[in-house]
Length: 253
Ligand code: CUA
Image (tube, rainbow, N blue to C red; front, side, top):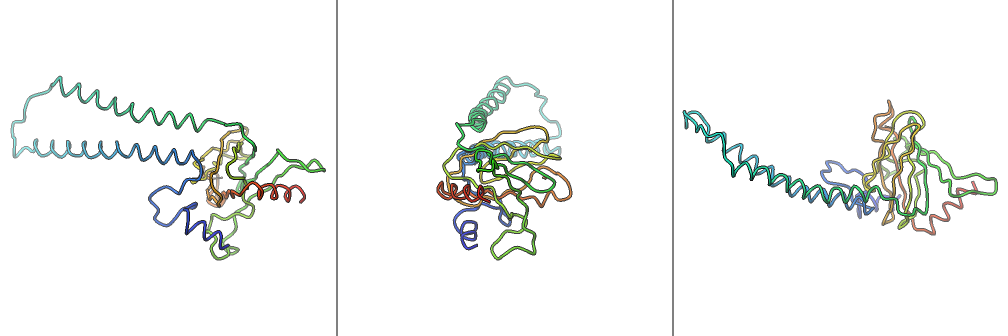
């Protein structure tokens, strides 16, 4: 419980905060890339917003009828038209290149060491670790339900805590297979930079490489029925030795 408080309130922000405006702290290279791309775009967005507002205000000012009853009849200007065609196309190019670079790097699945299947249900998530098998030929499979408000202990997060989090090791390439058993759901964890639709009858794939230990909180992000808001996601990133003992424990259950 204390470590939970520590992770969430002191060091990193891995869950939503009250009146939050920015992103949660990244834990994967992908989320770092998304945040950097956002900041790159913000540079252009600020410049364009200020420039367009300025033009608008100046136009209203100069074409106010009391000031200028007979406005200029000028309708054409070659230089200005070249400028306002070339400038936006260069701007678009400048944002398209880093955007595509990130998009393709997000698609990349780099030799995954672990494959985890996550299935959305009305209204909980279940996880399958089919890489491991015990003597009775059972693989790891469990359900992850939200902890109801009356069962929360001090420091736990309302509507975000689950009974069985998905456990993964840090600094390991993980392949996520995402699907749904009934209706559309969406597996989304902001700190990990993942939001992937869970579609019945279809397997979506995403990759995950978590750089630090911690508890990462997310929520179902596709309206899936009355309890859509009550099927949160918790990813627990642990060190490799801890992960191995977790797997051993799960297999012996
Ligand atoms: Cu499941 Cu929304």
